[in-house]
Length: 222
Image 1 (spheres, rainbow, N blue to C red):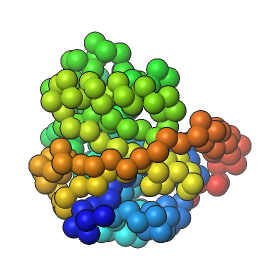
Image 2 (image 1 turned 90 degrees about the vertical axis):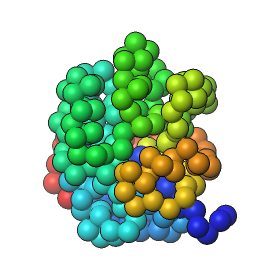
Image 3 (image 1 turned 135 degrees about the horizontal axis):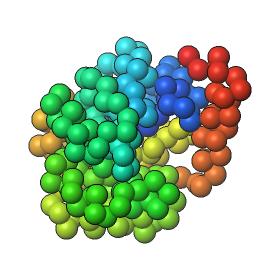
Image 4 (image 1 turned 60 degrees about the horizontal axis):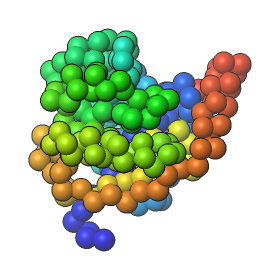
C-alpha cells in the first residue's frame, strides 16, 4: 500500500446510535488496530458520539451523521451542526450544505432501507457522492446497483463498513489521497481504491440485541 494514501471507513456507529453498544474508546482502539487512518463516525441523527470519539483521537476521527429524512438516509462527513431527523431530503441537504459538510447517499438500493428511485433522481445533483459499497448490504447486487447509478450520474463513491459492532470496524474501506477538509475530500474522492468485504447477515442480530439492551437496560449507554 502506498503510504501516502489514507485508509478510510466512511460509515460507522457507536453507542450514540440506538442500535450499537460500542463505546467511543473501544471504537477508536479497534480502528487504529485495523490500520485505519480516518474513520467517519456517523451515528443516527446525532453527532454527540462522533464528538466524543474525536476528543479521544482528533487525527483519526471525522465527525459525521447519518440523517434520516422523510425518504431514507443521507451520510454526511465534516458535520459541525447536528441535523434533525425526518426533514424532507432537500431540506436536510440544504442544512448540511450550509455548514459545508460532505454529503453521500446511504445504501441507496438496499430494499430494506434504500431510496425510492424517484427520490434519488431528485437529489442526485445536490450531493457529493453515493455510497457504492456498504458492508451490510448482504446481497452484492445492491452495491452493484449503487455503483452503476453513481457512474451513470457522474458521482464518485464512498465505502463503509456500516459497523455497529467492533467486529465490523474497518471491514469496508477506501484508499484516498490525503485530505483534511470537506473541500479537500471533494477533490480526491474520485481517486479512491476500494478494499472491502461484505459482512455476514448475522451482524444484524447484534444491532437488534443493542436495541433490546437499551430498551430494558438504558444505563448501558455511555
